[in-house]
Image 1 (cartoon, rainbow, N blue to C red):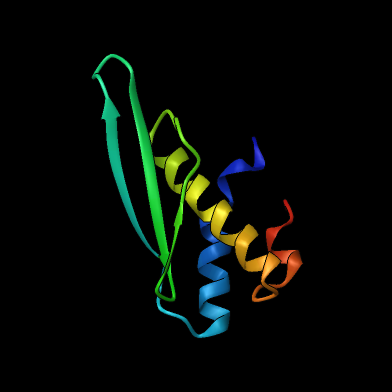
Image 2: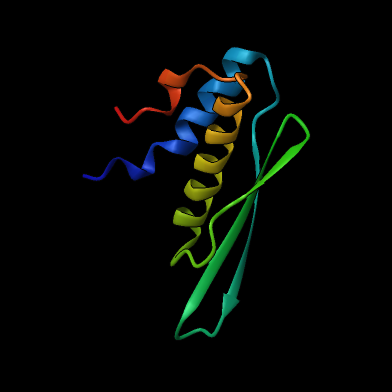
Amino acid sequence: VSNCYVFKRRLHEYAQKAGLPTPVYETIKEGTSNEPSFRSTVVVNGVRYDSLVGCCNRKAAEQSAAEVALMELAKSGAVNQSITQPA
């Protein structure tokens, strides 16, 4: 099992520990029904973080947005680096 599907959980844990509201995801489907593509944005404490482009499904787009949020929060020192490391 890949570790790529842990970012939403870790972002949720970070928000809880920091006393922040639960992260909110906004996901849109693009492309055709034969070749869909998804983009997601997660809002954490009023700040929006966008997923990488070209995710193949909603779950992957939301995980991507959560990963981007965790990485940006780690850069700013707002989140402990251990939260962003794979289990």
